[in-house]
Amino acid sequence: MTEPLVGFRPMGRDDLSDVMRWLREPHVVRWWSAVDPDAQLASYQARMDGTDQTRMWIIEVNGRSIGFVQDYRIGDHPEFAILTGQPDAIGFDYAIGEPSFVGRGIGTLVLRRFLRDVVHPHYPDATTYLAAPDHRNVASLRVLEKLGFEQGLWFDEPKRDGGTATVVSCTLDAALVTDW
Image: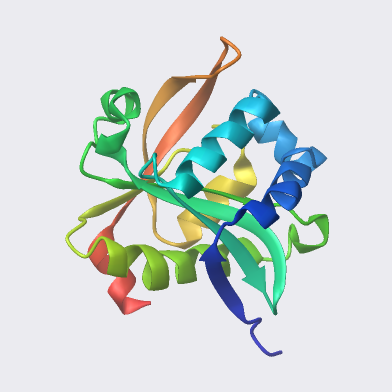
């Protein structure tokens, strides 16, 4: 079986309708339910305008847009840096939005390529990568485990709706991606 062609391109305004649709998909909303769509849209627009350091990407598989991923220096978000205790780490968040691509092992391939081809070259001095999925998100935790991430601190992350989500800080030694 031929490995799918995975690529990433900067998120643009034309992608926002797909991103907002993906955020409403049942398999995504389960983990992003505290996201206010209007606030999320405004934050994505700020990132595309360059007023926020978070970089936004569209995931493409065989030329089809299937989800999104973002990367950022944890220290650029002081409240998150305090929670994680990892201000120098490079954080990332991701979602496979298209339902037909969920549960097919594509997440592991996508994140491997993203960290190796996009994140590592942009942050060559980074020593740690960090993702913090919900503690109940077994699929996401499994993807990270396959890539060599180690689970660490559990903490309650405040959400815009006033609630919290208990997440697991998963870290990877950044030097490992050069072997991928």
